[in-house]
Length: 187
Image (cartoon, rainbow, N blue to C red; front, side, top):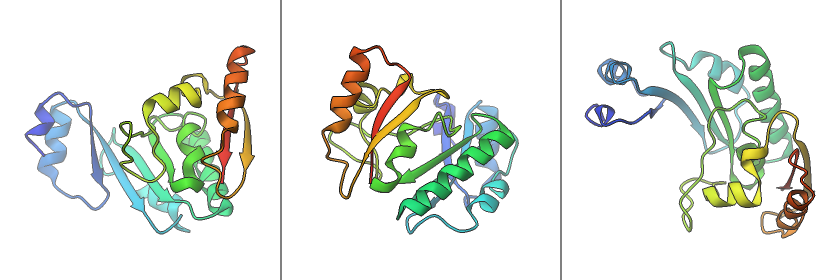
């Protein structure tokens, strides 16, 4: 890992429990930003806000939470926390993502939630629950156009990720030059 930090990478993602000062120093010397990650594949922990406030070990680190959203209440809790942190700390020093079909909107709306990065997978692969490929983010969900003023529309169902509605409506938004609108599936 330390050798790879000298290979020109911009980021290294280290789990919150990873403790190796030499690796952290190698990242700092190499100008590599450390993303300090917390993952929970069982849900959104009740103490997620506290954990995120305490996760950073060194100045300049980006904090990241990727949690498996189990229901609408957890999605709302995650969105509210992301917006609270954005108001408190500003944009870009964190990544808050919901995994799985319930958390999918947080990946597309990451800029609105104050996240500096969203994640996607190569076409035909899904490296983590809720990933779509970069082209889908750009072409179907109009990711580069989503900003603070975006109007959010959607279809609600279970299951819903397969719905053709986002393709139809987002294409319509593009044809009408409605660059401030996005249509998403909400499970």
